[in-house]
Image (cartoon, rainbow, N blue to C red; front, side, top):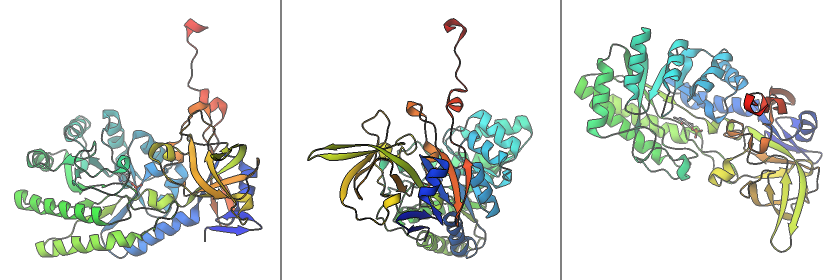
Length: 431
Ligand SMILES: *Cc1c(COP(=O)(O)O)cnc(C)c1O
């Protein structure tokens, strides 16, 4: 177990969280290498080694730092970036460009140029003008680009509206309308600057039911067959996205196989029937790799009891280091790390220190008797925590520590006040 209790203290991947808080300060993100590596292992055993011609591309946006990219590289995992900034970070970490794919619904001309310059593996084209844009830039630079089309499979998935991406009314993807998609495909096949690889979808995030993926697989297969019929063109790659759900509180986390086995069965039998070689199958997990591998540590400060209503326990971070509760009512669990085995006698609300009433991390959680100075740990914060952090109220972005079997190493330094103001200028007119 990654989480253990010893001498009343919460341990995480062999490290005392109380000691980590003392050593590195709070708020602090802690990431377990053991947990991340075990997810990669599960994917190797249940996917890439089980089915040949398959690949995993980690969605960098979940947690994209140089150390994380190094870990991916060591484990043979590709990455999926959605901005020049993520791409730059990966390249600076020494990540092989050909193992990078570029997603996103509005890739800017300079981002495409930069990606072509580094020689990335493929672009996932999302939108109707992007093929032309990529083609024009390739023409100018004398390059070719490998592309997939991200389609909108038109499935509904059971998740928060903000993280559902596969329905037709979405800013992501190309709608499947006959007169929209097929001219794009024809253009891509005919272009001398474009190597058309196949289709991509991503149906949403934090899914615990495989039906959206399976519906979307069915759709993508139909179009793969249609491309063969119309253009006698063999699709080389199908990317079925990420979105595999994790455990924040009491969700029943499914294995990767629960999603991938039935999908692979559909795919393999489809191509067997068609009598053509199955394309490479790619997945893009983000959250499911890092969410449960992360915890956040805070120091408890002000405690306010509103008689018969609620007890607010404030911590030294909040929506600046974890926006998810405020952004989409995400629910978390946690514990007082230095009282981890004590009876949970109080129902409290854990709030942040930002000037927003919505800056609540956990509503109505049972914990041991809280006191100022206690260390509070929030679980499953490894995904979309650090990567969504902000400087609201000029709170510095916390440090990130990578832990493994009792060893801890800093992978992101805590932001300093000077870091926060380094780009600010007092103009001549105000001097
Ligand atoms: C966000 C995203 C992912 C990863 O989603 P998770 O829910 O974190 O697994 C994969 N692919 C695309 C295109 C995405 O936008």
